[in-house]
Image (cartoon, rainbow, N blue to C red; front, side):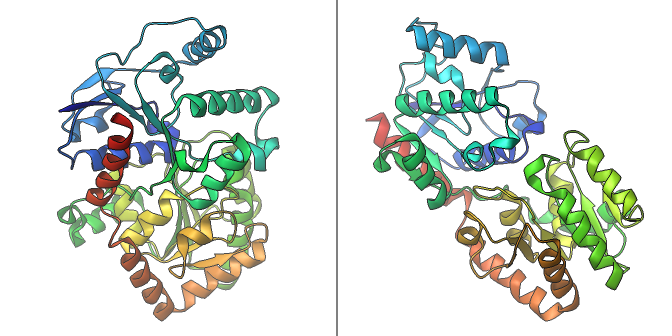
Length: 371
């Protein structure tokens, strides 16, 4: 049996790339063609749900610069994956520059080309160097939309045939965990009373929380019973967002939950009236798929790859306009029939996006490079 090493650098604080990494592990858990070893932080309790043996792997920033420098100077370092036949990484890992084994990795986006102000000059140079070197060495690159594929081809000069669009489904939860009793418990424990919009995102600038707060202020002026629920660690733009909440007099209407585990996250989707996703940059949005899976209406930005992802299963708005955002929020809050229709379309869209299907696509790609 072919030995597959899965190099998992993302941690719970990594946001969407971590959820994506777990989705990939869930899919590979369905497979039988590969003997899988996971290279990850052995202290991570989320890995216990998978059947794979885990070898401790944590990629510190100092190690990244060392591996980049060694690659530039053509210095051979010890191969940490020498026992494997082929490798896959759910996000970039510079340790891959040290291996002679064929590998594929997922390049999620090239945001720095769209919003350079969100990155320092050093960060932009680092990201470009990383993606150029890994893409030159990789046997294949995975991305999740045709939009991102075109960016990789155009901006990094990668031949189109080496880039595969393979979309990951969100993590599934056993139906038994989403009983009425469980949903009631989550409502009570987290203080989710009444009707609320949900936005699960880290407080990074491109997540556009400030415009969402302004839009929600307009919504509450017309529908004062509505609430907005946020997640994410209190860092980056968090203080600015909370100041905007206070300035707008929304302290009783906006609830910040912090980090939420997977079981509670799935429950929140089920009881929210809609997901509102105002982000200014997403290659593919995992929360949108999670909402579709739960049958929760989706409000999303009309830009980049998001219309490709949403199709007719959600309502689009201009993420640069708080008025456009507020209008869509009011529309879904006031029209129960529209909400039900969008929820049903989302479920239909997700019907084919199973871990088994995702596994077969990953295994086909890996089989083509392991030969």
